[in-house]
Image (cartoon, rainbow, N blue to C red; front, side, top):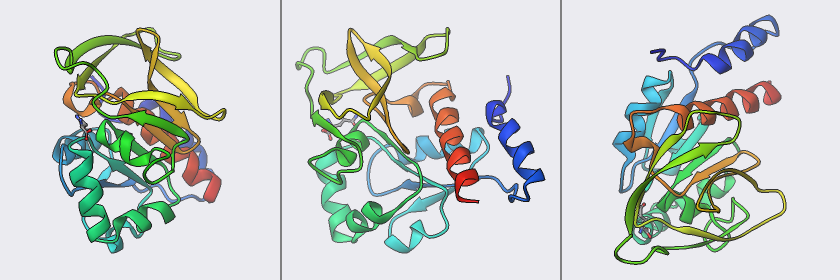
Length: 208
Ligand code: GLN
């Protein structure tokens, strides 16, 4: 099994010719609460340099940021206390938000993804479940782990749906922002993180 991110290697090779630096992408993981360690493990596995973000200054020089799942009310409060809410609003590179991270990025919070999201929107009994998801452009299903997951109630015109579960969007892209209602860091399958690194590589080559 390959541990690098093969689909981005073409970009890297191409950008070498253009004189773009070849270092591993530097990805921050918001490390206030929740599943940040698990994201760091997967990100390293797919070739990223990982930085734990706890203060606004930690965002400097990052090529991308992951906002993990956890308890959105706790993450929102801590982010406000440390001034990270404003700092993340100003952050201009790609962002991946999972579960509570998706809530943080929505219209009602940081406003970086044009989505209306409802917290804990699955009934109590089915608050946590697993489902095979079909990813756009990929024939192999992805095992989605949903833990007291949020549901997308409305989405803006520019938002692309990359996976659905029972007709509901669960993986979406709004420009440089990728959000998942499930926990891709809890499965032994790095494809969502690989897709995110593709966004990062694209954004870097545009900036270069
Ligand atoms: N229910 C949590 C919240 O609303 C999100 C759950 C998760 O991140 N797994 O913050």
